[in-house]
Image 1 (cartoon, rainbow, N blue to C red):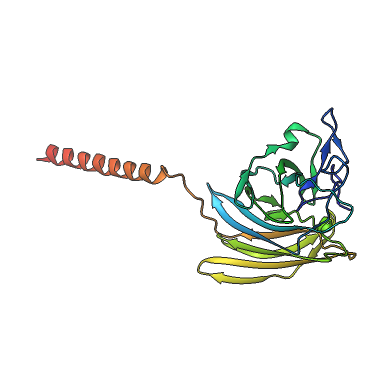
Image 2: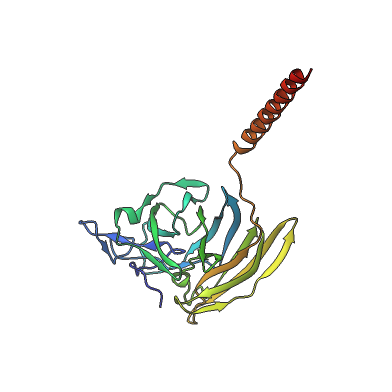
Length: 276
């Protein structure tokens, strides 16, 4: 079973939480009276772009999460959802949007160093964000970028899918649609779902070509009261990777070549003068 220092309900892997006066995590809901709405997310779309940045492979992720709040007669929800979201090591360029409004966030693990989220390829830190005045249905969007990990000579990345809080008798199914654009040469592509650190189950995918870009499509289906497939891991081998040179390299090489030609011509001219 997946371990995490926070065992509270997740919004997309966004953990709903509360705080004690001392700042420690307490297992309470987002509302002062202890009420918390049931959530649904029948579909989610996660778009990856794998590209080269300064000679290293990076993933750029755009997640789109249409979330609904289910009707409950015993819930007095105040419209605010505090949450945390796990981030892979080295993540940069993080943006969180509620609809079209960008939200501020803080580094939750920096404030609480013991709060790490466990995955099959390592422990991740988390960010904190407050969703305020959410409606019965809202769109959450998250963008972030991180370097790919290498294990045993292969590149791989993991998407942390925590869908169980969105599954109930009222909303019993959810499908995550992944689109992965490989802007790099890749072979031996394999996709897995991970329930535990050691249990990796192959998942089918389709592979199409758009010009020089491979496009991988995966649909991961989850159902209430049935075993969940778990997180997604994609593994591949890189072939003939051409490092992306810094912008100043080409002008420097050209200047050096011109200087070399000038020096050679100067020596040749001096030699001709000596022989004449």
